[in-house]
Amino acid sequence: MDHTKIDINPFGTARDGFVTSVEDWPPNVKAAKDKPSPSSAHLGLELLAVDRERGIVEMAFQASDALCNKWGGIQGGNVAAMLDDAMAFAIGLNLDWGQISPTLELKVSMMAPARPGRLYATGRVVRRGRSVGFVEGELYNEEGQLLAAGSSTANFVTLKKR
View 1 (cartoon, rainbow, N blue to C red):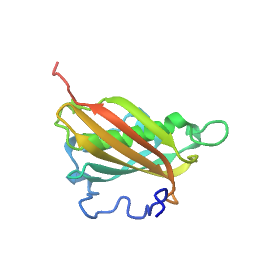
View 2 (cartoon, rainbow, N blue to C red):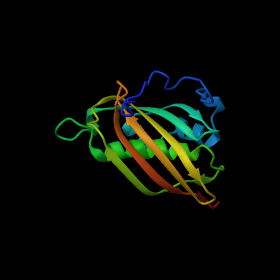
View 3 (tube, helix red, strand yellow):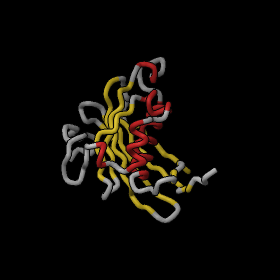
View 4 (tube, rainbow, N blue to C red):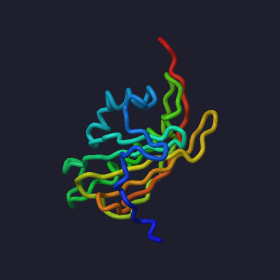
């Protein structure tokens, strides 16, 4: 079995726990979709589907030439940022309102060059404790080829009211 290629056609479809209707997403995820961070907007983030129960998100990025290095590939830091977004949204599915989940550490392995165009990412919670969560993510091209994989540790922080 080839683990470096997947069928991306189901991405963003309502199936087996995945919800595509923004109205049914957790409030913090809806808020992030309604007002994306400048970084996410620069990456071309589009949230497609969430499975809150299993802690999985599916998203796409419209990667522009502005994300590329001088050889035409998407610069590695931008690939890492895409995976960081996917993993952050996954761990954020079950945060309480007023909580954030800053990344404590991030590891990314590049499998193949990422090129401009539509890219797909998944983020999934591996384990969630009371104060720390462990997350994994993958980035694919339009043919379903695995471009990069990552793992992350996030810390849960409750923001204080001013």
